[in-house]
Image (cartoon, each protein chain N blue to C red):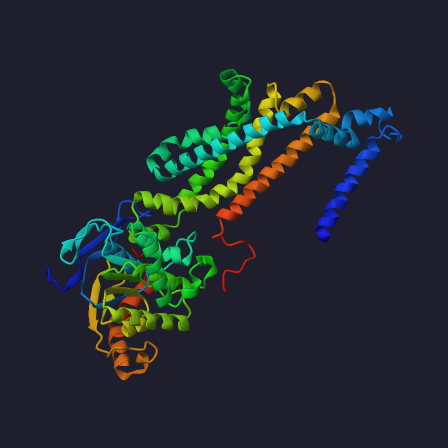
Length: 275
Length: 264
């Protein structure tokens, strides 16, 4: 399976955690989960809440070592942090003691780029995400949407080959969110990176992705279905939702997801016998 | 401005009452002898005269200099030690687990009692006072840095790692700035304690310093000089605290101030 067009490959990943409630029986977050992302492909991963989506992404990023299974980046087994990937977190991950510009240039600085050049590139990216005038602001002086833009610039300034995004826009209001989604698509189509975009929002997944992967409810999460999204690009995330093909795909995928969502729901409200 | 006026009025009223109640010309209503009130509580005008005398005559400067130098040395060395130790134990989980009961014990100990031991070890000069101040300052700073390192946001940490930060860069760019906000919260306390260390040390045994002056004055029941010394120390403690506040406001610009809106 070491296809050269395959930029990221998760091969039968299993993640076990020792659970605090029952020390003898480990909690299995992921069970034999496999996922491949081709170069330049935008893959959205959807699944019910608490199904281990973030765990899957942390494994892909190298932040978490799987209990078994391999991660391959361009055919090479991953050891330690995935240096070819950028990660955008669900929660605020900016360093509050650095200004917007210094946050964007942090990665370049860590890689030893001269300060002047780093600042030049950082400014360029701040402008591209529409924050040219906010370079000296600190994160607490920016709105939630602006902080997400800074985080996006922080990731993209390093020009990673693979973008890992963990529900990056879930905390934003719906208008800001659609704006950000459109901007993400515009930036992505400029030089197609490989993307794994985690979300629990099926509409967001369909409107952004080339392919949607549906995960089962936890524990022992694994992919249960894959759907190719053949909607034409460029897309406007608000408008594409009104097309018949979108509705069709949505119905199809939702049908596959529904059982898992109900399972996750039942597990949440009967936590004693679950797990 | 009204608050400020009220504050000044309160001070004036207090000093006036103090002055009237201790003036030997005013008949005492509690003490049978009108001089007794002045003997026990001092007289504001004489306290003021003593202070003026000290500064104009210049007798106070060497003593003040010694006390301030002791305070600053204890503050700087104790803070540096606390930061270094806090960073180390905050990051080294095993070492922290092993040392935990000893640190708790040392912190719970009434450390002022170490002053006589330090005098035996380091003599009656400045070193014993600085040592006492360090033991007081160290633990406050240490616990705050330790806490600060422990409470670094895991998301910010993971993000910095994804951006390519190595261990040293994480220390320099994530752990230290995060701990710094906790350090400053503790510095206001510790600058006061550095002062306590210096003055208590001088009080217990020395030949110079403001604590020594107070001790001398107490020996001859010169209550006015004692109060003048206390006022002097209070004033300088406030100055040192303001200096810490000033540095904090310079270094911590990234922190939201209470009342400042986080939105644009």
